[in-house]
Structures are given as C-alpha cells and as structure tokens.
Image (cartoon, rainbow over all chains, first blue to last red; front, side, top):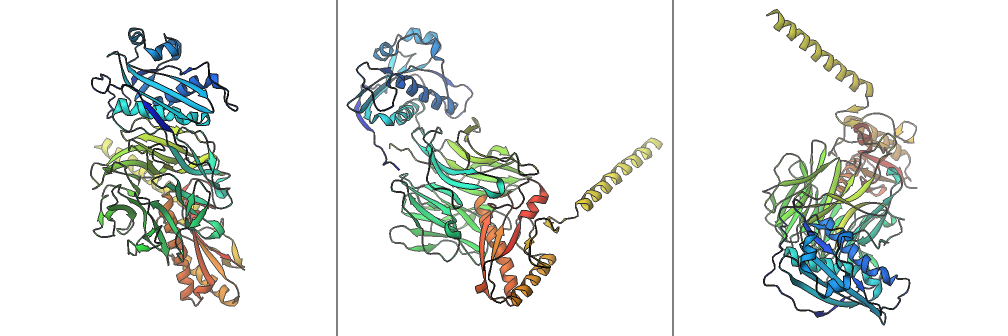
Length: 445
Length: 158
C-alpha cells in the first residue's frame, strides 16, 4: 500500500477568530442544522492536465464531498447550488454577503484550485455571512491524486472552526469485508475512507480474519486470523504488507487492541478453556498477565491515558463490564442494569465507555460514564455490536446483522453509525457486507 | 354473580387452551430440552452409533446427561482406534458478541475434551479449536437453529 501521504499546509491567510457570530450547537443533534453554502471551487484556467483526472470537474467534485461530509454530520444543511448567486471565483475574492443571506445561508465556503507542475494547489475560505467577514482561510499543496483527501481536510477545518471540536473526515475505517453464504462466509480485511471511497483489501480471504484495529498512528493494524487453522492475534504493517503473529502463545489469542501509546497489544489468551487478559510489549516482547480468573475475561480496551482497562467478564455468571487499573489491580464491576453487557470501548475523550447490551432478545449500542452511571442506549436492533469511536468522540460506528430465514436468506451484515446524542443513525456505504469496523485517528494531524 | 362465574369459566377455558397449545408446540418440535438441542438433525457420525457432536444451553458450557452419554461413546470409539487423533471444535450461536463467543466456544470444546480425558483418552490425541459464532451449521435465525449451532464437534484429524 502507498505510503501515508503528507499534505503541507503552506500558508495561513488572515484569520479573524475574535468576533464570529455563527456557532453550531453540537450537543443537541440534528434538530436545527446550520444552513451552509458550499460554492464549487474555482478551477484556475492555467491548470494543466494530470493523468486521467478531469481537472475541470475537480472544483465541483471537491465541494460535493464537503457537502456530503457536512450533511452526514446531521449538524449542517448544505444548500442547493442552483440557488447560488455568485460565480465561484468572484465569491472567493469577496462575497456579496447580502445576496448569500437572501438564500438563507449562514455560512459560505469558497475556494479555488490550480494544478501546475504535478502539484495541486488549493485554497479555501469560510465566511460568516451575518457578520460579513472571513472566519478562516487556508491554502495547501499536494499531489493531484490526493484530491479526495483535500476535500476531507477542508471539511475538517471548517467543522473545527464552526463547532469548536476536532473533525473526523480525513480518516479511514478498517473492517472485515464479508461475502458468501452464512455457513461459509468468506472474510477479508478491508480499508476505506470514512465516506466509503478508496476501498482496498488487505487479505485475500483464504483464511478467516476478525476484529482489525488501528494503532494510534494508523500504520499498523492488529487483528485475529485463523491462518493455518491456528487462531492467533496478528500484527500487520499497512505500508509494507508484512505481518507477524503477536507473541508465542500455546493456544488461541483474540480480541486485540493497541495501548494508547501504541507500544503494547492487549488481548485475550485462552488456555484449557479459560480466557484471561494479557499484554505484549511490541519492542521488548515482554508478555504480562493482567487478569487471572476462572471466568471468561475478554474484549479489553485501554483508557486514553493508559491508566485503566475496561473489559467484559462472566465472573458474576453472565457477561458484565469491569474496569481495572492497567496492572490488573482494583477490578470493579460497573454494569448492574438489566441484561448482559459486552465490548466496552473507551472514548478518545476519556469520559465515556461505549458498549453492546443484550436484553430480552434485543441488542443495543449505548454509552455510559466510566463508573457505569448515566447509561444511555442509543440504538436498538435485532443484532448489532462492536462500537468504535470517531477520533473526536462524537460518533460511533458499529455493525448490524439481519435476521435470516429458513435457508439463511435475508442475512446481511452492514456498517452503521450514530451520534452519541442518539441522533443521526445512518448506514455507511461499503462495497460488500461488512463487520468489525475500527475508526482511524485523523490522518493529517 | 352468574355473570362473574361464567366469565371465570371462560377465562379458565381460554387459559387451559393456551396451556395445552403451548404443550403441543413444545411436543411437536420435541428436539429441545430447556434450550439444549436433543434432535438428530445436523448430527454426523464418527462410526455407526457414535454421534460426532454434543449441544449446549445458551451461554453455558456444562454437559447434559445426553451429552455425556454421547462423549462416552466417542471415548469407547477412540479407545478402539488408538491411532486416531481428533480436533474438538467449539461453537456458539449468533446471539452474542463475537469476542465473547470465541471464548465460549473454547470453553465448550474443552468441556468435551476434559470429559473424554476422564474416560482415559490422552490429551495429546485431543486438540481443540474455537470458531465462536463464525461457522454456524444452520443458517436460520430461530431458537432451534441456534440450539444446533451451540455445539462441540469431534472431527477426525487422520
């Protein structure tokens, strides 16, 4: 796979942070989305052709991606372009604010691009229409084939400026691509941009693969594979494609995740029918036992400061969520509600734990505070599990399976996302059936 | 008064009918005890009269009386075939989280293995592998099919 591509921010324009009037209330969900106009980026006539890229359409395409990103947040309402009143290049210089206000837009995005010498140069501006002023502006240069990422980075910058929170558009999702009948499923590791584009397959489907998860820098993935019928945790370098078994365990290892510093992998190891939690330091190869209990201990997840671990255990009889110190001490059960609880995942902000709950034949995705209080169930369905956080801690992606009929027909597995407000549930487009999603951190941080 | 007692009788009749029909559906299926599968569908045989699999209750790995009887037959079969090694596959149904099910399958396979060992089969001949919910034998989403999928299967290696 290609090396991570760096985008250089070369020039920050005059930016006025002091007196902006627009503010997006992100605590309420999609009740009152902000009307925003995203003007097509003006394509400079001096632009040269680049490979099979249709340079003329690039300005429209980039603004289209930005609009789609915004719409998917549920926080913004991108306005229809046929109502736009000014040409892109003129608006980018200085919009006629009163004209844009007439179509009820509160914010305006303008920009221009130039391809020259195999470089794509893009600049954009965000305008506060009520205050009649520029809010932010940025220019950058990259290789033209990177144009989709340019659209995502612009989306992130605008999102940050308007919400005060980090964006999550220049990110990827790794997942398990599924095909074939339910009793003989073929599974491959797949990676795609957060909006479903640029899908690439990382394994061929010869062996069963499960639960891929990114490391903090998104270059490594840990996952479980049944290669040679030995179910083990693996480490995969996305850039080089090289992979190795993690540790030398005499039995099944599973449920891997990275520690927040990326130095360790935490996972379960099953011996004589019992599963406990272990860590392995990737540099020293030192293996450490974290839990020692005759029950099933699995699905471990570190807190972002690395001080705590959430996991699920059936030591009380049925699956419940526990939190302990990262050395395994001070184990505390945190779920006491009706039903059984699994797959705890610590939010990147540190304040919440996402989980799967099973109760009366239904599956829920929910969040709770790290002491188990304040449980909120976000979505209920026939089967869904495995939440993974967007890097800013606002959105959860998970997978959902449908009920199947007599011959297994009607079965499908798809990725879905939902805001932690419980609003804006939507399906993520994948080329095949999909499960076990893991959201990367921001690629250009 | 009469109305009241009439009503009572009607309710009683309705209740009895419900009870009877509940009984008859359970009888009709006749392949689930508690929620452990007891039927013959999906079962294969290591040899004549030696079923290859045992079934489990939801979230459980304990062996039922019927399961123990099946495993004793497997033990006798393995004693007679001294050069045969087997792998015991542990499986779970689709109604649990993936990672927990991997652990549960492992626990079920080991429950079968431990029992075979108490009947004198060397642990060296008995390897285990858990597939969790990854390899259902029945694709349908129904209590019967889930009960068929909660299983450990003894498979000949050589």
